[in-house]
Length: 334
Image (cartoon, rainbow, N blue to C red):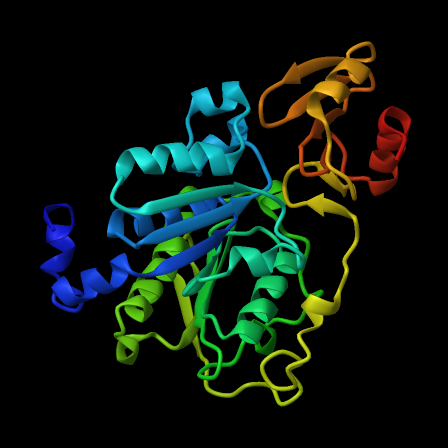
C-alpha cells in the first residue's frame, strides 16, 4: 500500500478502510469545476471504480478552475470526460476509471448508477440535481450534493432512509438567476465545496458513519460566513423521500435547454448524428472542425453549432431558445 501509505496512516481510514475503498464504486455527474476536483481526490484515494459522465468539451474559459484540463485539451476540443479519463489514468493505474461522454438523462441514468455505491454532484444546474436526487432515493444510493457560484458554496450528503433529501431544503424552480456567467466564481470556492463532498463520501465509504456531518453546509468564503443547517426533519409533503413519487423520474423534460454560464442552448435529437456526413453537408456554409468526438461548425451569422454522435447539438453564441431553434432548423432541418 505504498501509494496510499499516508492515507492508511490516518487512523479513521487505516488498512481496513483502504481495502474497503478499493472495493467501492462511485459515479460523478459533471466533470467541470466541481467534478474535476471530485474525480482527482477519489482517484488518488484509491476508490476501486471512479466513473464520471459529462456532456461538454474543454474550452479556454474552463482552465481558470477546472483542474484536470490544460491548453492542449482546448486545442483538441476534447470532451471533458475523455480529457479527465486520460489525465486520471496517468495518475492511478491501480483502479478502474471510466469517462462517459453523454448528457445524463432519466433514460441513461439507471445504467450509469448500476453497481454504484455513491453518487457525487458535479453539475451546474438543479434540473440534473433533482434527477440525481430522485434516482438515488428510489435506488437507495447516497447522494453527495455540491454547488458553487461567486464566493459561495453549499454541500451535503443525503442518505436514503437516514436523512431528508435535497427537495426538503430546496424547491425545484427556486433560484435567483445567479450563475458563474452572470456573477462569476473564484476557484478556491470550488475546491472547498468538492473537498467537503469528498470527505463525507470517504467517511461513508469506509463505514465511519458516526462522524458524518449531518448538515447542509453553506458558506461565503470572501465574506467569512458559514452556516450549518441540521438535517433532522424531512418535509412531510416531500414527493421524493416521503411520498416516494420521484417527480424528476416522471418528467420527460424539454428537448431544448439553456446551459449555465455558457451562452449556449442544447438541443437533443432523437437520433444519433453521423459526424462525417454532417461535416460534408455543412462545409459549404460554415467553417468546419471535425474530431473523433464532435463536429464544430462556425456559422456566418456568428453562432456556432457543435454536434455530438449521441444526438446532441449545442448552439453557441446565444441564450435565446427561439434563436437557437431557428439556426438549428435552418442548417439541420429540425
